[in-house]
Image (cartoon, rainbow, N blue to C red; front, side, top):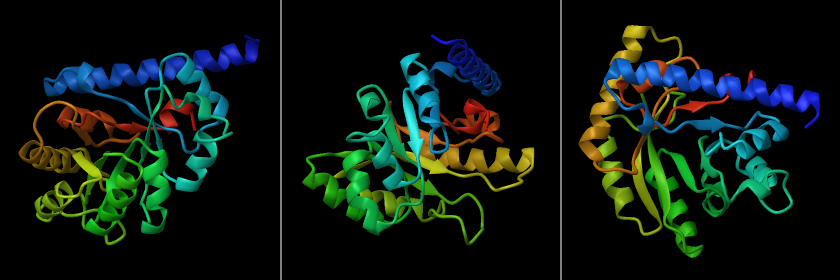
Length: 237
């Protein structure tokens, strides 16, 4: 391996090690097993070579993309990352438009941002046509901002019940985005409430509470998140 590539790999693996250590510390504070936390690496802005390096090193089990067309170009057909699909679980983490539901159902292993019955129904229809039962997370709205997608904690049970009745999708947990600029106390409160909703509605293994990004993932895993979403800290962006 050329020196530049080796140096970059060393830097990426050091970032992963540091993140894993911080996740472990957060879990310790929360009295949780760090082994139950799965890191979702957000690759939407990452260089293809960096993604490939992490995957080949066994450090990239799950990748998150937020643009359907970009993900299709990268991860399918003759795309630069298509060869990794057998070893990387691909999650859609952005706001999904219904006219992109067919492509999303086709190329993604998970859709982590279902925010309405309309979106869920379109995903279900197309996934069923592809012979798939697509795992999905329902997005909780964790603040009062009108620009944030998702359903309130009071609305979540009704949407969950409706999605459970669809043939082509399988709800497997909740996702949420913390309020921007929230204080540590505010983060603790919103994450605690999201965890309570998750515990009420989902039991058993194989389900996810996806909370936490680069600025707040330690508080999120301490509160109970088992699928934090990190990109910039991994790739040094």
